[in-house]
Length: 246
Image (cartoon, rainbow, N blue to C red; front, side):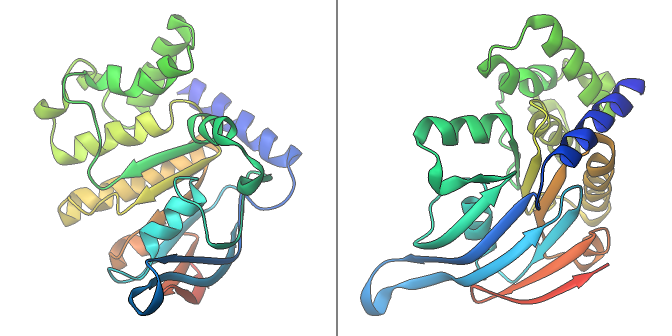
């Protein structure tokens, strides 16, 4: 696991060179629809995520968690306010710049796993590196390291349908880390898993933050999982109503 230490050290050095938090959200508003039928998903949300921390976002269904994650990840644009990720103002990026940011500096993990059924675990993990045309040797070494990191070194050749739900989510986490992102965004990553498996996946995310030197913003409603976060933000009806350190 020496490679893991080297990767983590490199990420830590990068974090030291950069200034400010990994994520800064300022007075964020997002609505859907118009007039009386408008749904105000976010109402003036502001917060920061320090580098190297795992911050959990808690809130009931419909509180605005997914909308907020989509805005932080550059998958949607706010009506008002500003999002800064890794010292980059998302509003200043054009379409190509946004695509590069999502490809190279942000990793996404979703509740539905999102793996490609016809590809093996190793091929799924290596796909982001193929998209940026990384050399074959680099891809192979990184895939091997990541599958070892998530405890699936012996399952590289298996396809998603041959893996359990927890194993699939571990593959999804490894894929999200393929291009060494600065920020990992996870939307209810344990939502389809039983309690024991969900806890093991959340513990893996906790370990990934330390090993890979990545910052994580994770939406979850499971009280048991919230205890693994460095900080918890409470989202209620589109507003941050509480934040606590763990």
